[in-house]
Length: 440
Image 1 (cartoon, rainbow, N blue to C red):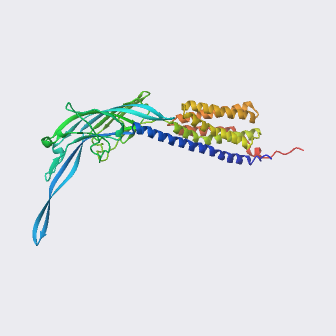
Image 2: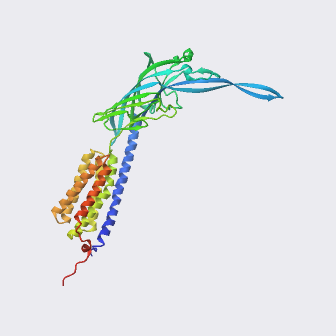
Image 3: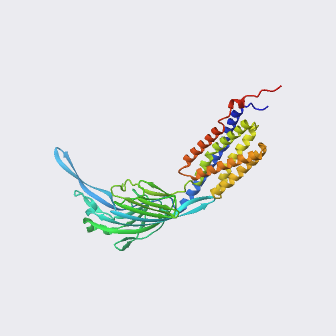
């Protein structure tokens, strides 16, 4: 027995809700594949280099402070003075007066199975100047100070990515750079240069020197600089055309084109937070609307596709007095859900645009061929297929519009709702569900 016309919309609505189950399962599959990709990328980065942050340079000056502690006490009614010599070790951290970083980064990809990681090789050159006050600015006349060997310190967040370091050049003389930051309390990883010539009799007088060095780093995802100098300028050039500028300090100016980007930062002594509470300027080498982000966003439109298709079928049933079985609704809904599964599987092996075109052609062709027979009309079946193809084309445009996807989606929904309302503005809905009188 056929379902009553009044009950049919409720049944179709429940069936549409049931179709959300396979779409939700596909969304879970996309999340699982993305998690696998993240694990693979992390493994590649571990062997190449993680996100790199250059910090410094600054001068770390160890010293020992010795003083006499005097305690007044009374013994047997007589005042006495007890003197105890105390010694403690401390570390002075002195920022460079000026630092100029010149950084170039080349981006490449490495694959592990079907997953690819975005990696870079960065060459960084630093030039600057230290202006050191007498006694390194330490004014403590009540203590005796013994200076240790000062160290010029450069922090590197992932030392495993250091490919090479040039000697530190001061006044034309080269100084070998040693592994380790030399100040693990502030910077767990990095390199340092001992500078014994800054102590002795020279420590009692103001002194200044210029320095220069270069470092080659391998990393992934992003590159950052922690400006620890009093005045820091950074110029970075890369062949990656989609940079994302982040961190506490944004570029003073930048140029972005198809061949890459150029960015310049300038951080003054009034904005630099110092060694103890360093902040960064950073560039992330992102892919706008990445693969799994596009797949996730596409699958969210699965509910819309199924709902719109079922609504169109129901309107055709009511307006043209067709009779479609709920199983036919379900088969079309499953074909719509299969699009997202095909898209996910194909896009992991071929370009996303080609995968989208193949999945669209397969699903639209299947549904159109099926509807030609179900609706008993080649024109109606092909018209449905054409409308569905146009819907997929609009979805692709939304996926590529990173900044305007919400606006585009809202306009699409509003346009479809307006079209349905205009097309059915003269429909007598009560008449469609009222049984026709039987002629005797």
